[in-house]
Length: 355
Image (cartoon, rainbow, N blue to C red; front, top):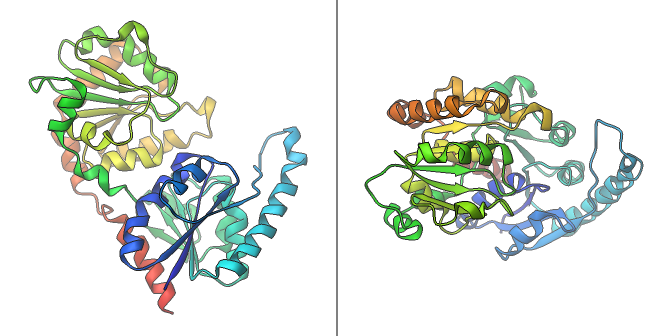
């Protein structure tokens, strides 16, 4: 039996594309193991799927001063030792890394064992963990055409991002029943991410009375971000987090307002959902969401507003413009050549395993 080790962790974005790959890998007869950190978010997500999970030591590598910079290199060295031991124990035919600092020792250890190793970079420019891993990788899959120029020419493969296939099978009728909405008004889905996005939440709630004149609003606002004063507001429902019903909510929505994490926007593209992206400010990140959003804007997939430019009037105008021109965005997304990312990436595995 072919054996693949998946690795990725630190955030849900470093795990969900791996999860999206699992059904197809099982269909092709792969034995699957997962390597992550001892107690990261990836551990719970993977163990729920009954995939064998192996934890290793993980340390963060920072570009700025932090006391932990003196201790984390030892955690990384320990992680490398543990990863080498696991490679010897598991003997995988191929390794697939979705990124996050826990993956660096895994990629290095696999490379030293001459195991074909594939990395996936979702963002426009590689993060630090993937930058460190690229020299040890067989190939580097990427999401944006612009990313290719940041990668070694002999390793870059433009694949897009693996999407959870269950998102493509939503039922709008079930969503109407779940939300209590009526079928006579269009629906806006607002996604702030699993932890919520205060700036997005506040901006949408500030214009809610105006929005509800023409739309119904589903608001996924994040953990501890519910606004009790808006409970029982006609045409507005809010949830901290949705898992099982998410596909149905997407199916019901006419347009989506979202942050611009790479996985999130690729899901919107796969679903052909016209979207308004409000990327995380460069003041609070390395600016990758802004680059992601602007790439999708150039492709005609998204409308973009940056946090600093939002006013009530500007946001309302952007939403109305997006809704009125939604067919233009749908047409652009429908023409994307990277809808079948899972198959493209799996084909790389199959070629490597057959050699």
